Every structure is written in structure tokens, then in C-alpha cells.
Image (tube, rainbow, N blue to C red; front, side):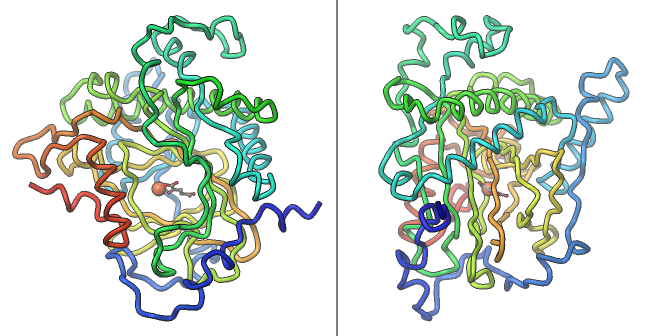
Length: 387
Ligand SMILES: O=C(O)CCC(=O)C(=O)O
Ligand SMILES: [Fe+2]
């Protein structure tokens, strides 16, 4: 079967007017550089993000652990982005995650748009893991049962059911369009019937495992950054639970228009922290000292970046840095992003005085972002929440 013809989203056909319309578009402040093929493809121009060996966090050698924390804090302040190696997520889990992700995207396009083939993961197991009531592998299904009176079980999903997304339905011009497809997977499970497609059992299982491991990594990073601001881990432990976070599986198909269109348009992440597992293809760029730089992929590393909510919580000590993905002409690219988020009703408040931003709930933030994308044409983000 020629999977390309059935799995590629029909971007050009569906967004015909964008591709033929030459009218001047509303440019977001982030759209500040022409896409130069040479720069993106030239290995010498790719930059190595700070690379941090976080196995030292478990060192008995206290100095090694302190040095590691200092590196995380420095990279977060100077770059807003860094890579971690020896993160405790095995190569096997990472490879299996990628394998299942590829299988999912290779479903015929019609199936991806019409069927909910993958949905909320099983939070019960993860809640129990976190509370210490499960110590063995999640493989052991008898340990997955948990009282249905658990308050978390009663919560409704916060991101709705639009799990599969492709292109950018709100785009009014090419510079607000993303040549990619994605599955958004909330890490909550309130209703067993939506997550029951037998064909994707392995996918669900491996994503649960991946999410669980990445979740404790994100907890640890948040704890270190909170500590650097004189705070304990309580805020994150109480509000960023596994079932309030979500995964986004991204696929960037080869793009014949790569000098006109992004794989993923410039944006900041609307969360506390993001953990990214990217493949070897490359294309991720971020803003450093006012210019876009291309990140050199490292197959052993996970990329971590600060999101908008951490910027607010830290009162601008840590910044949420703009990033984007440049599409590739020849090859497809895959990535998985884990978004470390609080519950919808959590109030985000700067932890220092005087606060730069007014208090707001995560729900209010999400809604404002969505409203701006529709009415203004792009995400305005934190500028809306300045005091
Ligand atoms: O695919 C990537 O490298 C970046 C993905 C990303 O920025 C996102 O999903 O928010
Ligand atoms: Fe992002």
C-alpha cells in the first residue's frame, strides 16, 4: 500500500485559498525572519543546547548533585531550553514509543479524522504510582484498580475530544499555518469506553509508560526550579497531577513549500514545562538573543523548555522562549511533547513581589489564547495578563 497517498493530510487541497492567496497577512511579532534553507540544513549552523547529565541528581556525592541543579537553573535562565541525558527513560521505552507513534500516523487519513482511535490514558494507575501504592511495572494489571470514589476520577476532561488535528483551521495566511498533524492526548481517564480500540492497545500501554516516566522527570525539574526561587515542591505536587498533563504526538510530513510555510508556527507553550522527545531529522528552532537558532538533535537526549505558566509563577526569572519547527522537503519528522500543566481551575500567581502579571486561572489563560487565535490571528499570550 502506498501509505503516503492515504496518510498524508491533504493540506494543499483543504487550504487552497491560503496557498494561492498572496494578500498581505497579519504578522505576529514572532514572524521576524525569512526561512533560509541553507541555515536550517547546514550542520555547522546547528547549535547544541546546554546538555545536562541528570543522573547526578541521584548522586551520593552531594557536590555532583548541587552542580547538576546549578546547570539546570543556569540553562533555564539563559536559554529557557536545555537537553537532559541519563534521564532514566530507557532506550527501549523511547524506541517503542516512536514505533507506535509511527504506526498511529500511518493509518489512512480518513480513519484518523473519523475515528477516535486513541484517547485518555489510565490515570488511576499513575495516581497510585505517585502515591506509592504501586511499585511494580504497570504491566501488572491487577494493580490498576482503584476506588472510583477517588476525586480525580470524577473530573471531566479539559481539552475536549478533538484529539486528532491537522493543519491550522484558524489560519488566515500561510505564516499562521502549520504543515503538521498531531494527536493531543489528555492524560486523564474518566470514561473507559473512549479508550478501548483493541488495535491501539500497545500504543496506549507504551504511552502510559512514557508519560509516567516523563511526568516524574518534569516533577523533579519543577522542584529544582521552585527551590531556586525559595519555594518547596508543594505547588506543583498539588496542582500538576498526571491527569492534568497531556501528550502531543507530532508528525511533520515532507513539505514542498518549506520556504513559505512552517512545520509548526512560532509559539510559546502554554504550560509550566515541556519535555520533548524528537527524532534525528531536526528542524526545531528557538529564539536566542533575538535570532532564530536551529537545535542539533541528540538521539540520547530529551529537550526541556520553560512554558508561559512558569514565566508567570517565577515572575519573569524564567522565560518562556518562542520556538518553531521548520519543515523538511524530503523526509518526515516525528516528535512527542509532554506538557506539564495544572488543573483547569488552578490559579497562577507570581511567587514574588511586586507581581508582573495579574492572577488568572489556567482555564482563563487557555480560553484567552484560543479567543486570540480566532479573533486576532495569533496567540497574544502573557502580554494580555500584565498588571
Ligand atoms: O516538534 C518539535 O520539535 C516541537 C514541538 C512543539 O513545540 C510543541 O508541540 O509545542
Ligand atoms: Fe512547543
